[in-house]
Image (cartoon, rainbow over all chains, first blue to last red; front, side, top):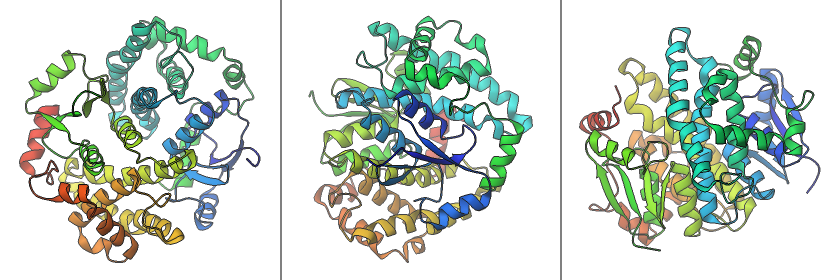
Length: 222
Length: 223
């Protein structure tokens, strides 16, 4: 167990942010090697460090892991955020994948052609209010417990709360009719490790800007 | 543990096929309830059976599981196809996700607008030959074992071999320079449960044709 995990990505949320949230919520200190140019990415590729020539990549426990879900699942298992048995894991996976589906729509929004953007935003709002938030509110209502699965904090809660922050950034009124989700968001945000991560100066990344999008285009050549 | 798993989807490969492959490779008999009309999908939605109003959905061990990865991970864990510890699981996940990235490109190809199709196929071929197949060939070469992880069959092998069949359908020459992958494909295909699944009359689904695509668009209300 040599040293802190080391995250390789560029200086933005992208596909690495969910990993930063999970490590932070687990109370795990991590280092970041931020890619700044396409040459930095080329170097990692030529090193043989990236199984599929892509980041995110994380150096952890002697492995160079790529693929967001592989990384998240490993961290969750290691830090006991993945339920107590396979049925709990199934629920955690199901909820996590729902979060990822909506999260992906929000993540890719900046890449949307300008003439399609309004339609995309409308779709995101509609899915948020009619599909995803009701599903999770219903889960919390069904058992009345503090967390989504097994009455214990899991990766599902952390991913969902992260998503709720992004939904709030998009349009704070979207959370209006979901009291249990608001309660979860508050509860998880008040956990000491999460509270710390939410404060200025942490490794949490701000929303993307035109500038970060340009940097991404430059580094990843798209 | 009441009865066989029951798969809810339409009668095509789509996002359910990898689940069919995994269950079949695990030697697990399963039932299928085919969605044939948009109304069938509406019924499932109104029943409250679909957490996010989507299929695939699998009824298994008292649960109505949705989300392909949740279903696959559960089946893999239950039937011991997920490695022996968390480090093996990490490798299996990493490999499975790479397979899924290429697999998704292939699944979505029929939905590609006609004027973009050739470019998309070229991109798929390029990624297959330069990114994905070399990565998996390298893994097999690195340890010289029969399977990707831990010298034992896992979901990673099954997902990869399924993908290799689709690559072959797209263009058999793509597999030309990957002897270890060809070996894995043959080896896994010869496992009794997989061999049976590969035979005509099994629950394995054929490639999507125009008719099937129209059916899918109708059922899922895709334009």
